[in-house]
Length: 260
Image 1: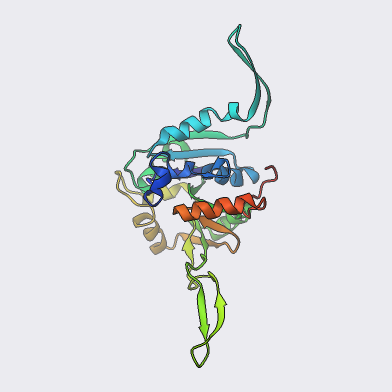
Image 2: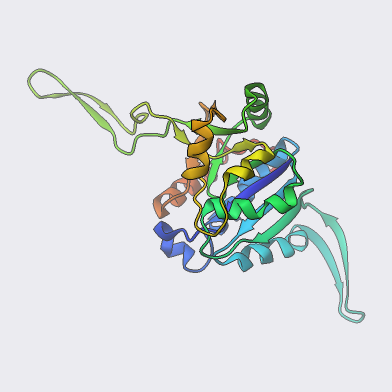
């Protein structure tokens, strides 16, 4: 099953980083967040990726064009201008990089991937969110539902802490960043049947999260996999700093793979 990753947005709320690189290339540790997402899928045996490019897509192309070399020990003979690869620590990935336009919206980008999906079920996620989600359990939930699409839902951490007050106005409890208001939100990590493409209109201004998902829901064709584990979207510079702090502990919860 192919994995489509949306990687073409502007990332305007991270302009300090995204003025130079697209958001999926913003690093956690020494690797872009896109790599972290792909490693999660690869851990479960899904190594066939379709990355939907847009804003500054060349930086993603260059990263993968040079990836094998950067992960390998090499011997360069300057006399013969030859290169021997001695040992590689690269990943077994097949990556299709599709240009979908710098200004296209999410639905329009996904629609352009139809030509490489070959009328087969596929997975889909955003290029800015990491999770310890169990991909086989997600797929099983989707297949049991017999729906055309399954999205993963999470209850995000509250933005602010909360205070509890006594009868005289004194603070009797303090909870820092408790769970939100109980609402479940779309966390990406979709599983879709190829019929989902039929719900996406033509043109560059179709937002997947609006008309297509809304119509799937109205038709009773949208399932949810409730994920109670770790999930974090890198939406702001503060999110990037937090994710890097967690990575630097050596035990990031989304690193389900074994190697460093």
